[in-house]
Image (cartoon, rainbow, N blue to C red; front, side):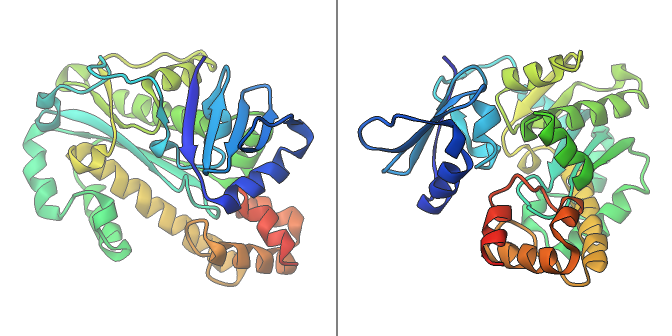
Length: 306
């Protein structure tokens, strides 16, 4: 039976217990609660460990944690999905996303095709892991990238659509998988695939889970597709995609902040709870779905502040 284990803060576990109130079951010894949904059985222990197990444990797990940090118990060493070392220095497509862990703002996803002889130019422009760059630098570099002869695709899943899909039962993982898949497809349509040695996706879930996500929408994995955690640190194509996606997210946040009338913070901290409460007071709860991923625990925390 597939399962995921993650250690979560006690505050998050208490929020989870409230969230699953109607699905609670008898708890085993040492557990804070156990709940059962159509996707998984969730058991939270006093140690902080939370076990998600069932047919689709990732569907519930990703609601509470950064999916990139969830590790299935079963190891997949030497997986055929692992990229060959030569791919990183060869012509390839890279894809990455931004905004998945942020309460406010959309998910932005980009895919970029970088030829081998363009890599030195990207290095000169300062392309690297976007986590090591300031927002100002990211914007400047992105503006330079999009002027180059590098086919790319940028997709933005805004909050209204995000919340609609979530209410229809789509997990964030499925949304991300479909965004990556469509962005890569768009780039593939712009190039001769013989020019590329493959596709590298910044891994946010197990490759088999990714395949299942896109299969539910009658899509198949593109040939020569590989997955790699922290791929933006190794692949210039993924790093370029990350920078384009991040810049788009920042622009979307600028727009939402202007509409809200005050600065909307990034992330999902207590500052975000305060901003969400302020937004509900000024715009009304019904309008929150325009600005935020409302299934995040921040919504309930904001409401408790009113």
